[in-house]
Each structure stands twice: as C-alpha cells, then as structure tokens.
Length: 322
Image 1 (cartoon, rainbow, N blue to C red):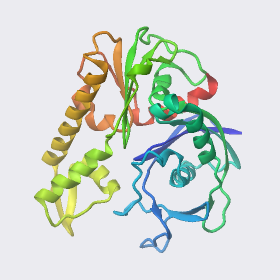
Image 2: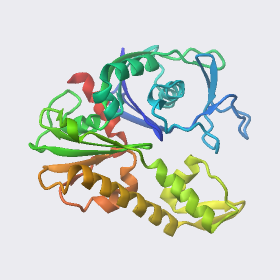
Image 3: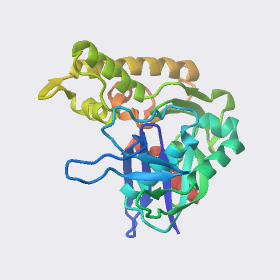
C-alpha cells in the first residue's frame, strides 16, 4: 500500500510521496473551496467537484467567496477532507488504497491529544467521490504528528528514520508560520517538547493577504475584493490588475504588509522564547517563511530548511519510519 503524507493547511494542502522510481514528489494546491456547484471554464471544462457526506464541494481557485478555512474546526472538517482528496488527485496519486500520515495543530495534539487524533482519523477516512460518481482512493489513516514538530523531524531525520549529522544538541525554538496560526514551542533533544512553551498564536500569513487587499483598496478604490490565489501571485510578482487592462506595481504595499507581519511575529516570538540566547537556535518553517525570509535569515542562530512550506509534510512522511 502506498505511503503518502499530507499537510492540509488553511492556505495550502501539501502532499509528499515517492514515485515508483523513489523520486520525491511535492505537490501544493491552494485551500480554496466553495460549497455547492462547480463552474464552467472558457474551454467548456468543469472545475473539479466532489461529494462528501451528501454535500457538494467545488474547487474554484478564482472565487472571491471561498469558504473561510481560518476556523478551529477546519482540520477535522469535510472541506478539509475534500481538499485532501483534491490534492492527491493533483499529485497524480490514484492508488486504490493509500496509507496516510498527517499532522494537526500543536496545541490540539498536546492539550487534546486523543480526541483530536480520533477526529483527524475519522476525517481522513471519510469517503469522498467525484460528482460524476468516480470512486476516489480509500485513505487508511496511520500516523498523526503535531504540526511544527513534524517540521523538526524533517530536519533531524532522513527517509529511513536515521538521524541527520551535525544537528543542534541543545534546546531549539520552533516557529511554524501557517495560514491561520503560528505555532511556537521549544523542543529538547529526543523530540521532547517543553510543555509551558506551547503557544498557538491567532494569526498567520493569510493575514498578509488580507492586509495587502486592504492597502490596494485604499490606493485603488475601484479594485474591490481579490481572490486569495490572485493575491498570492501578486505578492510574488509585486503587480496586480486593479481594473480591466490596468496592471499596477504594488511594491510598496507588499513591502509594508510584510514588514507589519514580521514585526508582529517577532514580538510574539521574543515574548515566548525570550531573546533566544539560552537556545541552540530557532527554526522557522511553514508557508509563511518565504514571504519573510529576507527579514529573518540574518538573525542570530536562525535555521530555515529548504522548501519550508513542505517541512511539515516531509516530516509526516519520515514519521512513518521513526
């Protein structure tokens, strides 16, 4: 049975698996989903549409009325389950049965362990079909790992479960910047966490998109509400179409909202971890890291893995072998 790891976050659903040639596959799809019927594209094709527990869900990445994923219940919801199946399809995983390793929010794992793990297992194993009746893979939930610690597993172990060389031997602060929240915790050697250091902060990098939309609206009142996917592309390109045929630079708006987010984040990190002098280092990962990399990579004793957006998903896959 094929082993696949998932990190179905509020902003993106990430899939990591090996292909038949033992090449690592990493796939990411936006967590953008609408309740109800699909749409028809210009070429006549339909956007993907799924049925779960009697409810139709459709993947419309251009929608400005997508379901809000910034909810405490989202990791255990039907829409999360549908997005997982959609991400698996986009990754080309069509096996009849798939063993799944996934992660749940740090505080849920440590403070509501059994209830949260059971809810995640039930969610993962809920049946989903395409609206045309096509049966999708049966997902066999195997492993649940806390978000944040999964990213640390990624840095500390290889895909056979062997420890990586030259890793810190002391305590390390972990900062996992997700779409809805930011998890902070101190981890000791042996993957033991310091209980009193657990914090789940109620903001993530989806807030950056919200702030960016606000700043664009102030400067260009005619622009209105943008889809999250549009704002994500605009963040990287620093340009956006504010009206038909009117493409503008948003350099200053992007820089401003990133500086605001980074400043607030570092205030929180320092409040939880102190000045970090007693730590061997601070590791940043999650989808939000790429947006603020330039502001944090020069800080003392900072660690940022390659492709930090996929750190939790890779760690989930490695957890199969620990």
